[in-house]
Image (cartoon, rainbow, N blue to C red; front, top):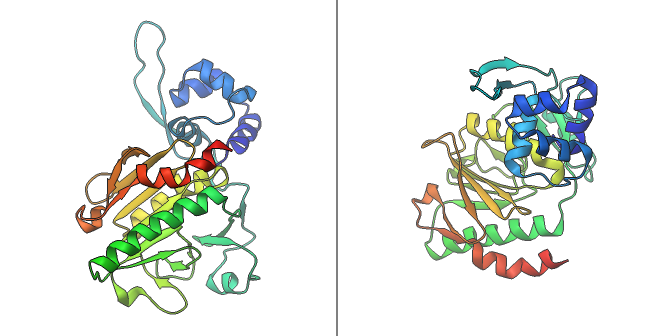
Length: 273
């Protein structure tokens, strides 16, 4: 969910800034700055906390009354489950997806179409640099895995209700690679975040990838210059790296390392504009 959508939901549900602060654990002053528009680009963790309130998930209801910390209560709040970018007149299928015009970019998740905004230049450059690193590693080591970049269709759940297009992915089971699309979960997925796909990549697709059997999931945050690395078989929580770090690829036992400091040097000029 984008910040604009969060602010609209705040109006719809009539939540006060004080209540939002209590439910999210975000300081009231920070909430007031965000909701007034003074803070244009909240931090990733802040947006994640706000999304939990309005996404129909269980929310940690916590606050401090000045004398003691109130016990956490798990309470589902908002009924909101589908973003404004979603289109659901009926349950869509693979046939509906294939019938779309070539210039219409969407992903199909659990029978719902989600519009995909055109990627920014920095989004494309980051994805391309990471893909190149993977490709060079496979080629130099005569590896069996195959890296792919968007737009490549992935029939993630091997059913007719979900088709996604990861920015970058690695597939090690070549039986999953067909001419039309990847059939089944890739071993690794990389998504590069943009303002329009924040909720989609960090919540909705995170769950889908994990449940489908993706082993490793990177979320690159260009504005914050961070990388969230999920290795699902080890922990449900991400390891957080920065653009100063060398990030190991877990599915390759750390033998492949992406030097984000080096990659940033190649694209730093884009941050100056």
